[in-house]
Image (cartoon, rainbow, N blue to C red; front, top):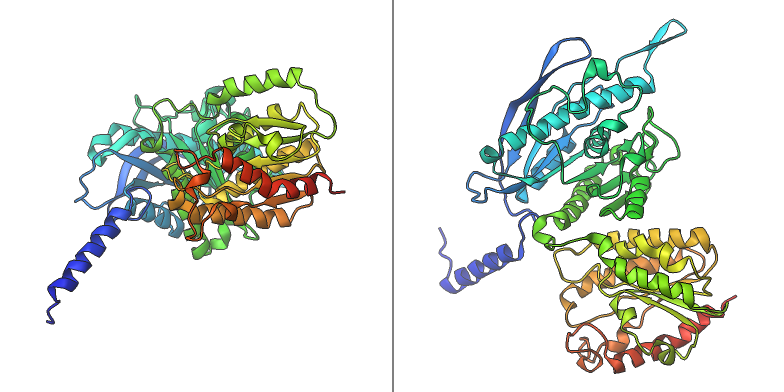
Length: 522
């Protein structure tokens, strides 16, 4: 065997140590091997044939050498229209293996299958929406039993019971949505509760909670979107935009399941619920079972779920509602400030809020100045109607730079784009032709480590802008970079993030002509 020189060995060791340090548990696949235990019975329940059916699951988790014993759990529920398939599938394996390599405990479950035929038409027994609602009801009862099972055996599997998430494929995601959001008083009226029991069911592990921390909805839909209310758990959504089987919006229904991924993303934003949306343009149901697309989907799911772990949450994380005082102040200003039809509005985060001399720097008198520092696009999306709708601005300018800020809560660039698209949609509902401009996120020393992601985000928004009428994009970032390609410190405050007075003057001077060109565009 050839000997490796000591100096080369030293650098190889350094390389692998640095690689390991760069990887983060729950975000990256830090394990190359995983362990599992299969066909664990988690319950038993009566199926549509009147037989007692044993309910089984598989547990997939990091190798036994893993020392962490308090890990988040992701439970996968398979699809198949409530009639077919099992816990052992290609996509379920992709999800469970990938998340287990990231450090999660995962499980894939079987549940009672079968959709009864309750109506006779032309001499044939047929399935109705009632039958599918009852199939969903049984599935969610079994899913709840599985959740209770893991709370009961949390020590055995090394699970943090405050971090139980659920996901699935198609009907499995429909089941997840029912588990997370359907309450006892929301059970579809068609469901025969006398026959099938309470919402929690009798599948096993009574005495434990079936609550979850969040849902990943993959090409599923919900019967009634009103099940999802203020204060409910977060939801990530993904689907193919050309799905002809299950709606990604609300344009048709699948046996009574009418409200799909994109609709639910928008609904969650309107309620202030943390959410995400990963569309696959031109793809059909299950992303046409395309492995590359499904792998990409799992990556997006992982990126989003990582931001929902409590290691990335503040002790008093109130979400969008922490801005109520700021928005109440805007409400008061809206009631007393009067503007002409020439007024323009600047909305955004601290870069806007701290621009005290905005009217002088842009040489424009009538500016409706609405910045609330530290906000992100989800916050703007939730409050945009209260901020904007009392006015009739000639043009709207938006700057929000906190969604990618070199923190563990950072959103992926494509998620920033989808949030911006939603904001544009809400604005367009009232102002169909008013110019809307994205002010490109600025470079800064503090966030230089994620400048590549910021640039990617700006580029995605720029491409989107070019595809829509009356959308504009202004980028003054190059004005703040020196000959070395780095931010020039003289334009920033001591925090190395926000512009100082000279920086704002430069920003105003750099964008003034573009702003006025947009305002005067006919």
